[in-house]
Image (cartoon, rainbow, N blue to C red; front, side):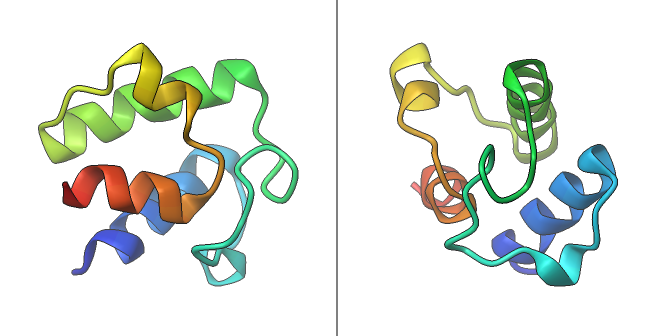
Length: 74
């Protein structure tokens, strides 16, 4: 499973939306309906699932699903 697919599935599961509606350009807050608490919880899930650590600076720059995928792929 590629990184985008796994991220989309995690987002869909957490936010109760259909994974097929998520694109790399989807804005996490505006398009997917996440609030600030969702974003924090999602970042914790991403850290756990991908074995990464997201700094506060990196977290502040995550706006789209593609931003998350790029961060994980680094």
